Image (tube, rainbow, N blue to C red; front, side, top):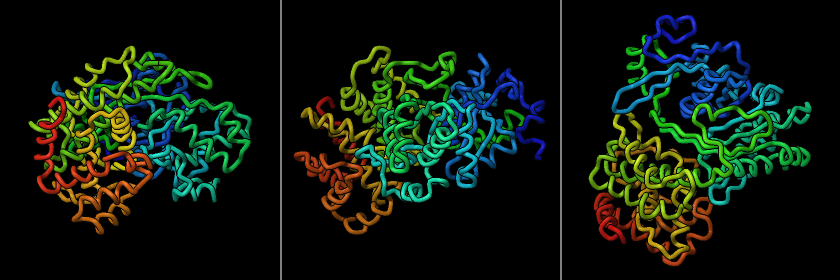
Length: 497
């Protein structure tokens, strides 16, 4: 073991400035299985449970599951699952040691171990952050995509599932067979009404394998919805080197984030409910207003900034937010086209939320890459931007700013936009490339080709009066004048511009 690596045996060398939990790990059992052991989970949910264990104890440690890559295991196991969280803002960086993670499994290496861990009686909560594409669902319909390669595999070989949904269903089947009580399954991804969305997908897959299992899930398993909010950029080698110099130990599982964190959960658990309100979590009867506000104002604005900012030549969120054209565009997008689609809700001050988001986007200490946000646009845009777009069109209201963003995304996805050359990271990238090779010089052809992808745009938007023509005009405007000129023109032409 490298003597400078973070590890229980090397904690004496950890800087006293690093905040440490007071609880003993071995005194607390593992009650959670988390699917999707990425940086966001470690910066958000695992940090909340670490705080809970420190304040109130309980058997709420986590077995983390990587559904794809073994790299997270290589980061964490040599450190016996210890890691640090670096919170950055203009005031500096503050470090915190987290020890709520108890074990790491890699699903492709040993799916049986994951299934057995889900099935243990001590497992009371199964949580998930597998990103939008990890649910193998159609973004337009929200239903299970039975033609998805992973679902085809899991229906054929349910004992060795490949998808996160397949793993979850197999684990629930093992619980039922062992007469273990139904658990709570908590979705923490950016899906509208995410608890109900996950329940529908799980019941659909289970029903195709075993109708009795589907009935058991519907009757007993709780799927509360939740909203999670924290900005977590990808950790870089420079981040790790800086943390080593400041903390005294090398942490290859370091996560970097902002001080802000929010978690809103529907108060509906199948069994024991962790006292997460001690860590600032809000328990509510209905998460949907908070969830939709976050999806549209934060995530929708973030995606907009990504496609416009990359085309304008920027790499980082804070750089794009400092642009004299892009910042007022994002402000107007939030205020005039996104916020008016939301329902007033007690405890949710939309004006204050927008103001806070603008400040968070401008946090120059948090180097959040626009390219990270731009990934998987086909999975993200339906709920982030197309849903409020539909709402405005149905009400006969202007949506010129959203239309410009959709046009910028199409050019980005087709590999035809401005800015540095990029690789399109999206489950539908091959189909985007086919459309681009066929229609690269034609705005109308690009609009028609992308609108033909019903899994993104549905059947209604292409048929909406004037929508195809307006989208074609925006694509043509960017192709002819560039994104900056179109942003300025749309700001001038907007009703409140």
